[in-house]
Every structure is written in structure tokens, then in C-alpha cells.
Amino acid sequence: MTSSNPLKAAYDHATRYIGGVAQRHVGARTTRVDLLAALGGSLPLGATDPVEVIVHLARTADPGIVATIGPRYFGFVIGGSLPAALAADWLTSAWDQNAGIFACGPAASVVEEVAGAWLVELLGLPQETSVGFTTGCQMAHFTCLGAARHAVLSRFGWDVEERGLFGAPEITVVVGSETHATIPTALQYLGLGRSRSVIVDSDDQGRLRLDRLEAALPSDDSPLIVCLQAGNVNTGAFDPIGPAIELIRARCPRAWVHIDGAFGLWAAADPARRHFLAGHDGADSWATDGHKWLNVPYDCGYAFVRDPAAHSAAMSPQSAAYITYGQAERDEFRWVPEYSRRARGFATYAALRSLGQDGVAAMIDRCCRLAERMADALRSAGDGIEVLNDVVLDQVLVRFTSPGGDAAAGSADAADADDRTRRVVKAVQDDGTCWLGSTVWHGLAAMRISVINWSTTEADIDRSAAAIVAAHRQV
Ligand SMILES: Cc1ncc(COP(=O)(O)O)c(C=O)c1O
Image (cartoon, rainbow, N blue to C red):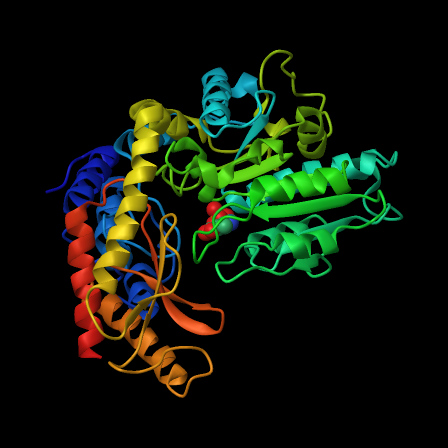
């Protein structure tokens, strides 16, 4: 059935897709070559009717669409789309505001102001914190570490925005050995070098070791940035945030402390888990995502900076004569590394408003309980399944051995267990009941399960655990 309106055609397809997403094979069911054949070819010379374009796109792309918004997608760390957030995202496209300058769309600017303040409160950050709405956590790191670079150099009278890093005082950057890849990438973008950081060892769960941090801190007052992590991408573990900040403040009072809380920062919104973050409000900047645990559609990250002056100095472009700058009004380009951009705040506003504070807390709590349920189901399924991590958040790491085998690193069966684990992951992906990926954890191949979707139920976990166990028995 087709309509004469491309928006209606898109709506029909989208609602059908969403209605069926829980029943669908979770992974993609096609290849690059087949997708290229179906979607590619040379650009037609003439026009195509817009409805036809949408209908063709929806049908042809369909086998290459992964049901990441569905309740049994457990890959990477990928949230779904809350209904209100998705609907607001559609409106965002219909309104098509340029969220760079207040004058181009006052509502887009004010909604960011309001939603930003809600986030600051919900995540337990200092009241004065400024907020940038970024594409994701990668650019949130870039924004926060740009503010850090500004602040640690301006203490030495160095204006990095005007003069760059040529001849600047050297900045020491300290990171944990388990830091996420997006931190070195942000350092790369900022001219601070991807591989010149001081690396601090982590423990068996991926938490930065305090004794090693102490030894890594410089003894002088030179420019220093320390990056901590709330939520390891494999285990979900938290660095000892409060004690680490205390130690840094005692030894290097003028250091800048940044926290990567891409998904873990959301624990601050959950009374049952906010203790993992105790003391996090003592940091200088925090990066997280809306498109992970808040279940806002892509692209949606947040950069939080305690010192708004450093934040805006690092991100503001040179003034241009044709732009009227707001005074009390928020010109969004002062807070992110972009000029013209999508009005990201609407979807966040809708997500937060539709859930309320209690709803956000309940969503975080539910996902964590479901992750525990998954771990329990797999542990109790019998021989050859080992949960490698302490399940403290949404992440479960699993390893498979032949019944009776020894999966530990260095054992004779370890290679066999690596191979088996990868084959189980592949078999689960092929089966399509759920989707999850693999990783290497401390030298061991492991299945990574991330439970972070608002719509996942206990039944989804039980069904997925059964599919994983069946795959283990079959490979
Ligand atoms: C701890 C951590 N930091 C940063 C990121 C990067 O987030 P994004 O892909 O939104 O840039 C991730 C993604 O999974 C993550 O887990």
C-alpha cells in the first residue's frame, strides 16, 4: 500500500518496522555486495517520485537494517529509542532548525537550556556546569578536553585558541590502561597526541589502580589532565572515582579531571547505583551519551564542564559580522565543535520529560537487573559457561569451553575456548533471536552482552539466554 505523501509513506513504513521489530531476526540478513546491487548503480538522470524513493529505500534497505532498537539487541553499547524521543526526533527533522544560533531557532536553543539543566541535576553535577549537545561521547570528550586544554594552559598565560600548541608549556595527560578508544582519539584531534599519555594500570575488572595513579602523578605544578572512567566498555566497572579525585586534588590541586561516563554516568540517576560514582561531582568535566542509556535516537551526546568560561572559550568560533549574538540567549555554537547543526535538544527533552526522574532511575535499575538475570541464567545453564566479570551494571562477559575444559589463560584448553567462544557468538548472531558481539578480555576471547534498551523484558532475557545456551551446545 502506498500513499501520495512521502512523509506518510515513511510513517507507514516506520510504524510497521517498529511494530515488528521484536519479532524480526535481530541481525542484518544481507551482504555489502547484495546491498550495493540493490541500492547502487549510477544516479538516474531524471527525477523519481518522492513516494517511490521512500518506498524503494524502505524495502531495499530493510535486510541491511539491524534491529538495534529492538529488545534483544545486546551488541556494543547501543540504546534503543524511547517513543517520545523518536517522535520528537521526527519533529526535529520537520522543523529543521539550525541549532547553531539562538536567532535561527529560539525554541531549539531554549529546549537545550532546559534539558541541559535537567541533565545536570539528574546526573548529580555541580549547578554551575555548562552543557554542550554533541553527536556522541567521542565529541563530548573532544569538547571537554578542549576546555581542559584551555584551562590548564591559560594558568600559564598561554592562549591556546589563538596561538595553538606551538611553543606552549607541555601538558601531561594521565589515563587508565582501560581507557576507551575515544579518549586517545580526542587527544589526537586536540594535538595532544594519541600515544604520549601516561598510562596507569587497571585491576582485574578494568578499574584504574589508585596505588599506580599515585605514582603516575607529576610532582611539580605543570599542566595536567587526568581522565577517569565510569563504566568500562567490557565489564561496566567504575574507576574508584571519589578516592582518585581526592588523591589528584591533594597532589596536583590545579589538575583538570575528566570523567568518561558514556553509559556509566547514568548510574548517578539511579539511587541504587549512584554509590559507584560517589565523589564524581568533584571532577571538572564529564562526557556521556543520550543515545546509549537515555534511549534517545542517534546522534546524541553531552559534554558537561564545570567552568563555563573555559568551555565556551575552547569552543566559540571567531565572531562574524553577519551574526547577531545572544546576550542572555544561548547561542549553541559556543558549547560544541560545530556551527550549523541539527537541533538535538528536542529528542533529549522529550525522553526526559516522558520518563521523569523516577522513570530514568527505573530504566537504569531494570537494565542492571536484567543483566544480572542474564548472567544467572547462563551460569546456571551448566558446564562450559563462565561469566568473567562482576556484573555491577549492564555488561556481562561470557566465555565458553568444551564441557570439562579449562578456559583460563595459559591453560592447554585456552585456545580451544577462544575458538569456541567466537563460534558461539557467530552461531547466536546467525540464529537471530538476539545479537551480541565478542571482545578480548585480558587475553581471553569473550562474548559481550550489553543490556541497555528501555524495552527489554525478563522474557527477552530468558529467550536470549536459551538461544545462547543452545548455540553453545550446538557448536
Ligand atoms: C566508555 C565509553 N566511552 C566512550 C564511548 C564512545 O561513545 P560514542 O560512540 O557515542 O562516541 C563508548 C562507546 O561505547 C564507551 O563505552
